[in-house]
Structures are given as C-alpha cells and as structure tokens.
Amino acid sequence: MDIRMGDGVMIAPSVTLTTTGHPVRPAPRVDFGRYSEPIVIEDKVWIGGNVVVLPGVRIGYGSVIGAGSVVSRSIAAMTVALGTPCRVVRHITDEDLTTRTAGSEM
Image 1 (cartoon, rainbow, N blue to C red):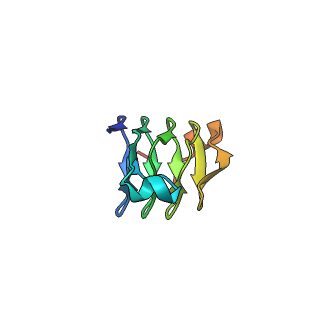
Image 2: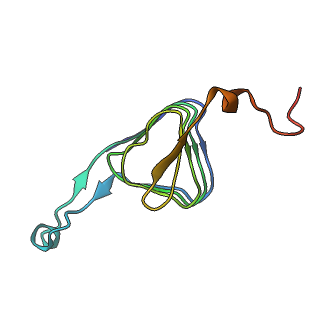
C-alpha cells in the first residue's frame, strides 16, 4: 500500500509510518495473515518527533501531531492531537493562524 503526502508537510526525526499490520486473533496471525491500508497526510501537517502512524490513518489539513504520539485513528483537519493513543486536544483557531512567535516578524 502507499503513503500519500500533501504539500508543505513537516515531519520531525524518528517518525514511523507503517501501512501493514496483522490480525489480533492468533490463528490467522500464525498463518502469516497480513493486511495493508494506505496512510494519507494532507497539506500543511506537522508531525512531531517519535510519532508512530498506523495503517489506514488520514491526518487532516493543517493538523499538528504531538511528539511521541501513536496515531491509530484518523485526525480531523485543523486540530492539535497528541498522546497514546493520539486524541484531539483542541482545534486550531483563527487566532492561532495570525499569531507569530517572537522574532518572526519580517
């Protein structure tokens, strides 16, 4: 399966994107049962260090994934999500989009 990545995506070091898995039930697992699902990372996503993204996940436009998270379910656009398992902790607001960090003025 494939990994589809949009424009302007930032990925920190030690991120794992895995599109394959195996069944939880022992019998099919013993028979080397595997499955594959794509990962989709939309435009302008920021993924922190040491994040693991599991099969079948879509990370929506402009989202931020916190360092060390395990993303096992899709994440909505314009949200901040983190943890194990990764969960949305807040939405990115219009104020977030206009706020600049110190020293970033041009």
